[in-house]
Length: 582
Image 1 (cartoon, rainbow, N blue to C red):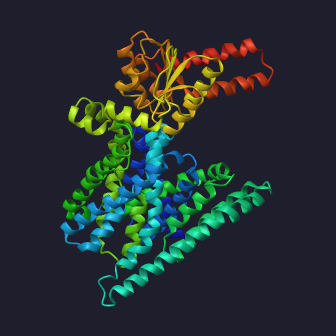
Image 2: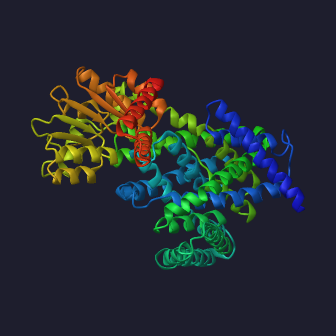
């Protein structure tokens, strides 16, 4: 393809992304749905207007490499540390269980054991890029279910190393060379992966931080950005040469950078690139779907989609239930991981290019990825009403929720020294001990105001208990847990949960138990203010808006405006904001 033709088709893809995103936003849908549908419109006929398969795949591979680099940079392994047990145990078991589901499907379709194994590996990889975007848009990045999902997603993404090196070697098990040749291939593949991961670890601890520090000292933003992009492309190229794939190398490079002191600056530099290449990737995925193939294989695609949305999500919920998470987190995490995405796409592309799988298997994986990504906002958005429905059913609630006696036993086991006991005379109830809840608790402790904190983060509960704070280990949305706080005796309740739906459930339960109890609720988004007010909140704190008003106050104060004038303006803006959202 000539450069002019390539640029023309690249412009077509970006233009389609723009139009699709604008239409999706006008319809109040996530923009990624607009990208996917735009790709379907301009993809190979019918009904598309461009059919250059090589160009589409080139754009998709380049786009997913830079996209996954930005995703890796955005990860904070330190913040996910407190869900490491869930990530490792739950993530590994979730992958293995989903692979088994894929093998059963593959055998049913007549693809054989290896075809089923390949399908199962693709089904095990949920979409990190999609869930990050949804969690960001909903303001749920720091929520318990958000941390659980991100922890499992990291394990899934890293498992791609094993999949990409073992699947080609396993394909030779049926060859005449016999078992010895297959084992030799597996050993060589594992050695390559170990060497790549070892080099990555060495660069993470020695090379990359020193390089970024040296470049940062030049004071040139252009050189810093160029260095970051070169790191991404170098890692992607090295991984591709070793047979690990462009996207995986870029993702690992991003994780390496995320652990340096310059991670926030790197993310701010690559975020615009991430957004552009995210649109390129999702449009290109839509372009790769052949409607004729989908029509001819609708039964198989439907079965795979049902296994992803139904079987995979239920298996994830079952595992999280066994790991002790509360029902709300279980349901949201299970539904949030009920899709396949970018690494499934990469795995199918690599498998087809190397002749490991046929066009039918790769086509089914691609079609299933597109459909489940399209369904993800709807499936994940149904978590709150579904949870309310489940709690009304004794049978389903018994499976999803830990019963009161189980919760008591877990609390006693985790905090035998007294956690879970409420000291008499607690005047304030704090529900949720993330950053906001911790600040409130520290202030009350400094002023010697007796209070009780409710959360199911065992490490945070233990820390507060050791500081003399009365704590209850449990889910703040559970009526049984809330009853232990004795809300009818308290003077104030403060809901500091990061999830608006959880805050609403907690608020309604509190108002049923103690209608006269004043309740202050923190929200992430302005659109949640009227919902929380309607549920009975006595005061609503919009986190981003309050941060903005403080910046206004500091700015006007430093410009020399009189304090009364500044205070009057801030109060006017605040009243207008909350009245407007009410």
